[in-house]
Length: 196
Image (tube, rainbow, N blue to C red; front, side, top):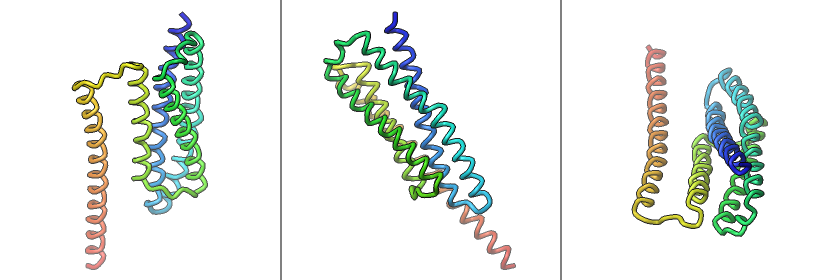
């Protein structure tokens, strides 16, 4: 029975942790793009994003990571022989990378608060793809263990995931381009009306 309790709370921890990681880096995007705003909006937005980032990191993301890792240790304690499995070694390595990513995000959060981070919104959008790739790989390893099928269905699902990621990136690029065109249009109207 302990195994099922550990597993249930492990999955809950994973959901909370990833929700926090995904949203945290999205806040970094907005925080970085706030630099393009005029004052006083820039200062107000940066202060608000800083508060949101700290709360998200310390109240949601960090506890999600702690619960995930603690429950994983509990799961392993109920089945210690699983430590001999090769797929688990790969999964643990990927989880270690994810923990490194988590603390790297904490470092970026501090640099943003101090005004020392020069990353652009586009760079943060790219950074936000890392946990997606890790999540997919970790889940596949956990579900299939050492028997990951490499048949046509698997490759179709993989292609679908890649297509989804590409479409999200293309949509974001289109939104940025539309925003730039709208700003240019507003600037042109402003200069025409001030000239008359």
